Image (cartoon, rainbow, N blue to C red; front, side, top):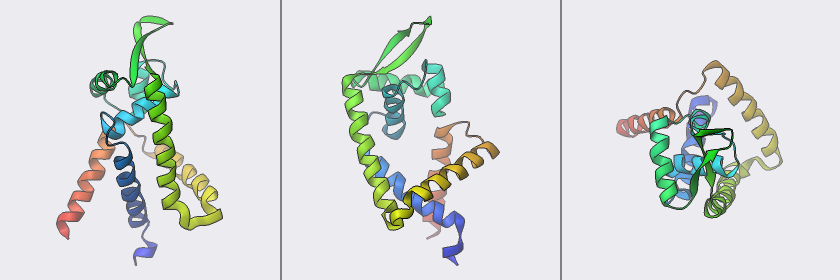
Length: 163
């Protein structure tokens, strides 16, 4: 029975969230990955491009092209790392900061729509989900976020072809 199928439940939730997120960031250069770069740069989460690539699970070459596109759009800039002049930090511009704040609010709204059915149990659910995610990541650490997304799309396409 589907109500007892863990994989089905995760897949449905993930599919709905991904569709909402893709719609919210569709105009950001690089889509969801580009948004992740802007978000990381807005929060100063990575010391340099290499650290950002590792943090986001994005291939370094792909990240370079993403940053080029985001820089051309005026959302981020590359600045010398004060600790190592050979290294570059990716910093959000004012426009990048504004985009991140706007999209962060829209993503929170999409998340709230999905979780609305939980009512007061939402925060407990999110806490439990975070614990499961941390445990699952320890069992099978993410090496490349791009690969994970590609695998999810492949699985969705296989399911569509079977219908």
